[in-house]
Length: 318
Image (cartoon, rainbow, N blue to C red; front, side, top):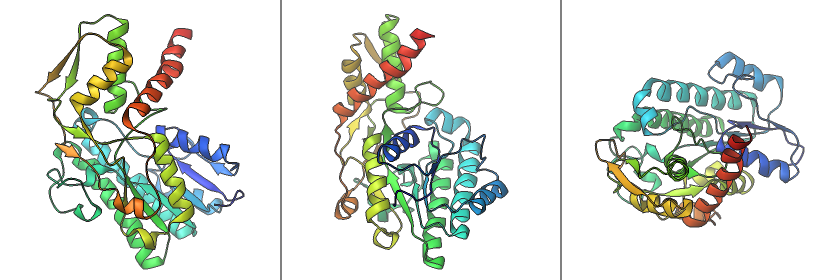
């Protein structure tokens, strides 16, 4: 990307968007637009197309979407399917018709089959049924990825699909309704420590395994692929992950230790676990020049420090 290029970042207020915008601005990119959902409703096809027609967007990082954890996905499957499908379809189609030079779309590891072999390789997508608890979200992501892929085939666009594993880090949602596994556990353990609660309840059995990637590693990947890799080299998509996983119990114990909570853990097996395991094969990304840098414990400590400085400190000052 050239410094004068017009760069669109959708979902700029989210965890990944904040980290990406900080990196771009720190790198001297000033011609960036990152409209809020109030400024540009991406669910509105007409408004999205007019936005692209009114300004020559060179590069797009499409990060916007309707997000949440297992509880939200189970409770609101319509929103997870419809809103994510509409948002992504409108952006990818508008970018194509407007002649955008390059676009990066973020998929999700939930597109892999529930019983997928491990580690999950790119060719394993659509080889079996989805995990029921996030099926709507997975279908929306698959549809958008296919639109980007078909645009490349039919129109010669340069749209890349990156498939990150579970993410965590600075700027995540820590409120219970929207939190993911790491932010939810940090919130629960920190609250329990401050309020001297004797135990913390965790959804599921604790036996499921998850791969977790620190948000700054994902930003590194997006910038690498935007600057150095073309869609013809990627194929349908490329996995972006850490290449190793841990159980939810192990994750909880690690966060418990980092927070300094001394109470008990209680796993509620009546709550859904989600997919038994999600570990990515990241060999394709490695061949294309990208590897992660930040391990579990380092990333978790950085995230908790950020939480204390930016969430707890602000509550105390309010």
